[in-house]
Each structure stands twice: as C-alpha cells, then as structure tokens.
Image 1: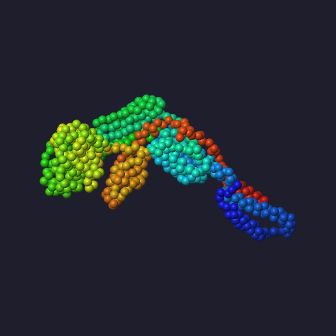
Image 2: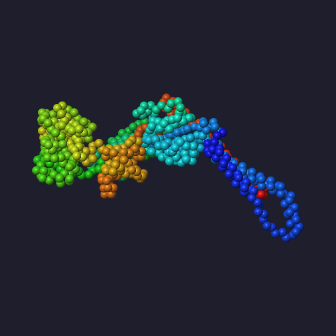
Length: 638
C-alpha cells in the first residue's frame, strides 16, 4: 500500500492537529442547565440520579470523542489517496480515437452512429480503474485531442461531449500516429478505435503505420445498416461565349446492397430547375449531365430524397452545393489602328465593355485610360512604358514590351503547348498556320504557354504586379481568326485577368486544405461557415488557407488595405461538398486490421464504483457521521 496523494508526515500532522482540537472541545467543562424544581423531594431524586450515572455519562462522552477521532482519521487518510502498489504500477494508459467522420452521421442506430459511439465511450470511462488513464481524441480530417491524459471521469466525459460529427472523411493514419506518439514510453498502452470501420488502409505518404509490440489495438464497432444513396460528384461551369447559360454535371451513387428509388432535385438561386426520379441498382453509379441551363445567376444546389419503400441512412451526402462565377462587366480598352477580326471576337461576350482608341489617342492620355480599364489590348502597338493595368499584346516589339522579341520566324507553329494553362483551355492550336512571327524571350517567372521548335510565341507572366499575355505574331498573318479558338483564347485571357478564369472551382471538397483566393493586406481574413460561426484564417500569397470540414456555402471577407473599415472590405463566396464515395459506403466493418494485426475486442471495463480506496474511506466517514447523528438524537452519546 502506498499513498498517491499527501505524504504520510503531512497526513499525521493534519490528523494530530484535528484530533487535538476535537479533544480540547470535549475537555471543556460542560455548562449545566439551570432547572427550577418546585419540590425538595424531586431535587433530592435528581441528585441521587446524578451520583448513580456519573460514570456512565463519562463513558458516553468518551464514546462520542472516539467516533469523532475515527471520523477525522478516515478523512485524513482519504487525503493521502492510498492505493495498492500493484494497482498503481499496472494501470492502463489508453488513447480512445472516436470517429467523427461523415459516415458517423448515419441514422441506422440510435440518434446516429456518433451518438452510439459516445455512449460506448462513456461506459469505458465509467469502468476505468483507479490507476487507469485515458485520452479522448476526435478523429476526422484532422486529429483533435480533447484534453490531457487523465483519470478524472467527469473531465473525460466533458471532453467526450464536445465531439461533433463533420462532413469529411477520417484521416486514420494520422490518428494512429498521434496515438502511438502519445503512448510512447508508457506501460500497458492501448489504442481504442470507436468507429464504423470506414477508415481505409493505415497508409499515408510516410508508408504503413506500424504499431509495434508495446501498443495493443482494440476496435469497438458501431453501425448496422448499409443502405444509402449519395451525391458523389457535382460541378458547374458557365459557357465561355454565353455567360447567361451554364452546364451541370453530377453523379448519384447507390452504395447499398438493394435497389433504391430516389428523387433528384436541382435548384438555381433557390428555385427548382429540374426534378427527376431515378432508380439505382445495388452499387450503381449514375452520372447526370444538364447542358444549356439558364435561370441561375449565382448558387446551385442538388438534393436527393428517397421515395416510398427505399431507405437512405446517411443524410450528409444527400445535398451538394456549387457557385457559378460572378458575371460582372469587364472594361476592355483596345488600342488598335483597326482590326475587324479582333473587334468581332470581343463582341461575342455581352459582359465586356469594349472601348476602341487609336495609338495616338492612347499615348496622349495613358494614366487616365489605364486607371479606368480592367484589361488593355495592344493590337500591333507597343507603348513606350508598361501600363498600370493587365494587358494583352499582339506582336509586341520595342523597349516597352513586357518580353523582348528576337529574330523573325518563318512559318512558326504551336509545336509545344502548356495545355494546363487557363488561357488555352478549350482551344485547339496544334494545327494553326502562321505565315511569320517573332521569337519571344521570357524572363524568369514567366510561363511559356505556346512555342514553336524555334522558340516561344505565346508567353504569360506578371510585370509590376499586373498580368500580361504576349503573342509573338500578328493574327492577320495566320488562320487563327478563322477558328473558334481565336475568341476563346481572348476571352480566357480576359477572364484570367479578372479572376473569372477557366479553372474556376465551383466547389471545394471537405477534408482537404482549401486555398481560396482572398484580397487582404493584413495577412488575415474572416471566414463565415455554413452554420454561421466566424473565425479568422491566415492569408498566404493571396489565398486564404483553411482545413474544410463542413459542406455548404461559405463567406470570406478580407481587406484590400491595412485599414479595416467596412468600405475597404472585400467579400467572396465559395461552396464545399463531401463528394466522397468512400464515406457514402456506410456498411460497417466487423473487424479492423492494422499492420497485419487484427484489432482485439474491448474487455476489462466494468461499470460501477471505481477501485480507489479513498472513495471507500469517504463512504466510511459518511457512515460514521450517520451513526453519530443517530446516537445523538437517541440521547445515547450525550
């Protein structure tokens, strides 16, 4: 037996002081109560009774004193937290990983799977031994410890209550590595995984997770049903030549073992756009394509609802969100001596405000013109200095060009194309015929988008904080204006400058680190989540960085100056979705295998009074107090 609380010397001091104080109280002279006696014979009887019972009275007071000293001894010994030496040395150290991923929102058991999992963990907490210690951690796209390693049951239960399910898959390898690190060097180490088993393999970029021989793995499964239909893909884009129209692609998957009938609804800006009834076979993935839609200016939502006779146990994947890129009018200034091909291409987009000026008029009013334009297009004209605006250069030459041009090229072609660059998306430039052009010399940091075998002829980059695109040939010396690629190339370049690029992301995926374009000079932005909660996120290189775990519409507010006044704030919106077929497959796993070892079943936890001696000492003190109360009121010890 050893003491885990106060030292023995401290306990003896506390007990001695309390015992001396209690004894002193009993040694005080008893103040007798004055009693009026009307008859002398009665007074004589009282004196006789006093003489006969004086010894018994002293014995009763001594018994009362002993009861009080016993009570003090019990309380003092409880402060020492006495424990058996073997129990203290052999206590277990546990890390409980509670799965809070999207699949744990399935409603096939109890309120949902996470609710059942939390109830099971509470049983473990209440069955801890006096020497056991536990750490509770939430496992989703990240791993979040909810407190320190502790044996305090109330503290552990409060931590458990803080777990909330997310709309993201679980990062099982990261959670295991965290648990192993937390248990390193501890005896009787054990990892308890409470999950439906939809965790994937315990492998990450560092390789397989190895538990070793010192850590035991326990699996507590939850869940019962596998029937579910979910939206596993959803995206939208506007047509580049008609921004009032758009197309939608989505995919609905039946991950269950039975045929299911569902109703699929598509909403644009909250209004119903399409309603379809679908029948999906077990395991079927059904893609749906909606071309040439109109009526929505900003938001799109897709919802599925099971029909009568069908079941859908996971509501988290029944709803998908997307945002269309904003349609705003871009001001384009065209500096040209006259080019019908160029003017006709720019007329295809109704959201362009195009102004034409001659090279002479531009040279006379450079500053004012540049300040009022989103994009300046120089057609065979090169200004004396770089403009303070985004610019497109057609056949630039001279010292004012953003890139130098070298010797003339005879019949160059697009032999090399960076097809991932947004300005050439949806274009076919391989067989464009060019009579003559010039080789462009990019600077470090510039991107060669297209090049012939003799050198670059299409370059993109930045100068003085503004973007540019330079073509090393006059379009009238080629057959490019006769192709659909010509207006698309121009519009893609303008969209790239105005942040309406062709690679616009209509929605992000939960469980990933998002890098959302944000305007902020303070290095921070305010993010408002779908539930209304607000938090500050960092902004790095023009993008807000955040690990997303909730599906829905988000609002991101930054500041374009160091001044945080409302008028200086810039707000953008974006959407996020689960879209994970692995999370939609909710069939619970009966066993869990890590590093080639099968996880064991939970054992050794019994709900009841904890095996700590101080609890019994306090219980004995309560019993002694009850005895004292009873004897006092029965006039036995007074």
